[in-house]
Each structure stands twice: as structure tokens, then as C-alpha cells.
Length: 323
Image 1 (spheres, rainbow, N blue to C red):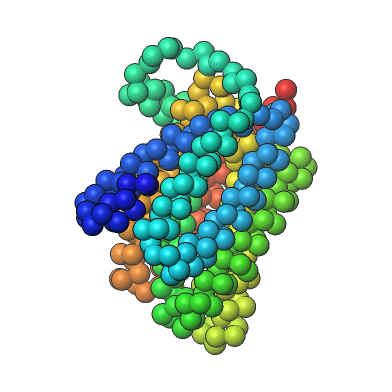
Image 2: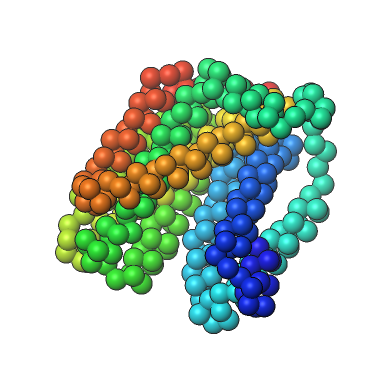
């Protein structure tokens, strides 16, 4: 990230170099995300995994909600390269903070020095042969396709078809919609898991998502009502994500041995991000062929397929062991 502002300030930044830098950031983010999700069981006891993931989800929601607004203000104030310099330094600060975490990581029982391709194959085999992790992975992949396509269409739908102003759209989405809903969902998730179990909590969260998008598809064109309806639908959508994610992450961490946890998280993240790319392309193509509102209805059907996968498999009643 530091290379981008430095190249820009020296006049050497080109689009290919920017693409290389972004590719490097993307590759490294897979490593860091897999490690972050894998170290949580070493920080908290197993009964608190869902609560820990909920707290991380709440802090992440606040950061993702406020980050774009802060970034936009900084770009207009000190320029884009200087903003990227601050972003790079913030990542360095995060890395320094990580060095202060005192934890005794559990030793894995995997083969020392195993090849990368072999580890990838082990991760794939573990996820997609597992009785409950396989349907969880497949359902989540389907969800990512629908979600990425729907989000690709949503901005155009709100700004062009419904006629919302960009400022009102941004405030509605960040402050009223996903931000508040995500915080509430993460707050409710631990209690839901204790009462219902991870499987039923995941099922409820995935069921709420298409219901929220039905609300988006039925929004009227009149601007005051459109804003209210969109804000309510997006709040429900944010709630579904904040409600389901802690249960899903906590369950994955609880049923996976330490030797496989990093491979599982890398497999799931890589597959989900690939499905997100597919979904973005699908959403753009369908929006051009069918229109925004019809495309959203098709994505609602795909969200429903993700729900059926959970409902038709042992995942629907799964509970993580607490010992």
C-alpha cells in the first residue's frame, strides 16, 4: 500500500503498477484473514467463540461504516495519495499492535514443511467432505454470488431508478442501514446461539436476507417513502449479516482441529471471494438484459437456494461442542 502513494508522489504511478499493488494486497489479505480467524480459539475458551466473533463483528461494522466517510473526507482535504499513505501507516500500526498480543498458540499436528499445493488440497478435502461444513460452505458460496450481484445492482437501482441523491444514498446505507442493523445483529447473535444452537441461528440469518431484499425490490418510486423503505430493508439486511456471521465463524472454529483451521479459513475465504467476483459479473449482465428490479428478484431466488441448502442438511440443527 505504501508503494502506491510513493509512486504517485514521484510521478511514476501507472495503472499496471496499481493493479500489481492491489493484487499483492489481496493475496496478503487472505493470509492475514485466515490467521485472524484461526487465532481466536487460542484467545478465548470455546463457549465464548460466538461472543468473541460477535464483538469483532461489531467493531468491524463500525470501522466499515465510518471508514468510507472518513476516507472520502481525507481525499477531498489532503488528496488521494496522501490518504493512501495514512491508510498504509494505519496497517503498520495494526501490525505493531498485533505484536503485543500475548498468546500461546496451540501446536498443529500437521506435517512440518508440507507443500502449499498439498495444504490447499487438504483444506478443500476437509471442507467439502465434512458432514456440516460442506453444506455450510456451499450455502455461503451461493449467498456470496447472490449478495455480490445484488449489491452491484443496488447502487444503480437506488440512484437511477429510484432517483435518490448520492449524499442521501450514502447516509442511508452507512448510518441507518447496514451499520445499525449489523450492530444489532451481532448483539443478538450470542444469545440466539445459546438458545437455538449455531445451525438454527445460521438458518435464521440466511432466511432474513432474502426477506430484506424483497423489501428492496418492492420499494416505491416516491422519494420520501423510498428512503424510509430502503433504510428499513437495508437495516434488516445488515441485521442478518451481523446475526449469522458470529454463529458461522464460531461453529467453524469449534468443530475444526487446530491443524486444519488455517486451511479451512483460507479455503472458505478464497472460494467466497471467487463467488463474489462471479456474482458481480452476473449482476452486471442481468441488469443490462433484464433491468435492475427484475435482477434483484432473481437474486432473491438465489438467496432462497442458500437457505434450502441449510434446511435440507444436518447443518440446520448443528451445535458446536462446548468442551
